[in-house]
Image 1 (cartoon, rainbow, N blue to C red):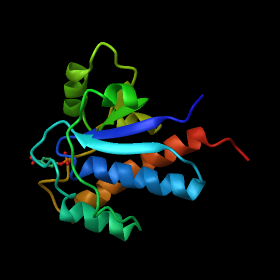
Image 2 (image 1 turned 135 degrees about the vertical axis):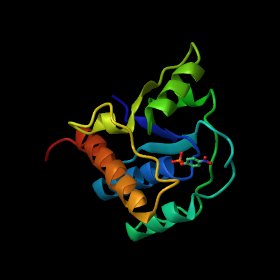
Image 3 (image 1 turned 30 degrees about the horizontal axis):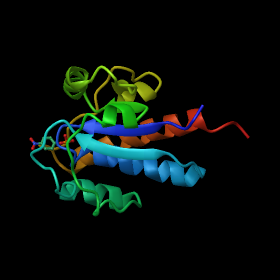
Image 4 (image 1 turned 90 degrees about the vertical axis):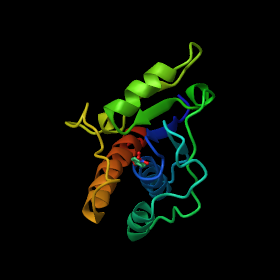
Length: 156
Ligand code: 4NP
């Protein structure tokens, strides 16, 4: 089976999904795995903008530079370009299901569906919170990234 191509989706593409992209890039690099990874938002208010400064700081604390990431909105081509489109919360997932074109091949789900025991849970939106919220977001998306890479990495 070819490696998956994963798109993470949140509302603004400036907090949760860029951190999910960063976490998966980091874990893939550590594992020597090459995946297609990207992130997008269901909304377009922040299109073209870098991630939220608190997300940039959080990623930097964990060794990933996301300053060059730029927000974009989900587009129809994403539903065939990616094998998996993973939403941060139920609202994002409902939005994606409504957008999903007939020819879509991507499987839709929640980011935390990847994590045993956390299926169906949302990654809490840290936008209106404090720095601790961003650390919690990082912990959630890192757990998901590790679970995905574990699944794709044959045991030595
Ligand atoms: P994100 O966070 O969906 O994790 O990127 C948010 C970013 C922006 C807004 C809400 C949530 N906003 O309302 O602009």
